[in-house]
Image (cartoon, rainbow, N blue to C red; front, side, top):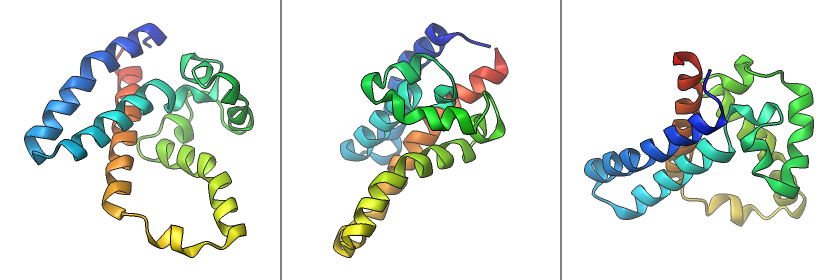
Length: 141
């Protein structure tokens, strides 16, 4: 199992590769920037290791306390934290509860309907890719 430094090195090496692949496929700088920024964020701060006292957890600084209930609910390397797709979905649902409640209480449906689904899909692809590289490297090494 790679340690935190190894995960970081993998991220530093693969982020430019993700950027080059994205741009070669889409030829769109906006798409590429969304993918590499969400990929990098997921690899460094939004991966399965938020379920323990880890580098990603500590990178949240004063906001790391929001992950304490997550750590109490899920045990380390469970299907729900390190599972492909399901891990990212659970973290998004967990983190998204707060803004969802605020929007719901405010009943501002215009905010919900004005969201560009293509951008949301790109964000999810970037987040899932970054988390997947973390999980796959855990299984390989």
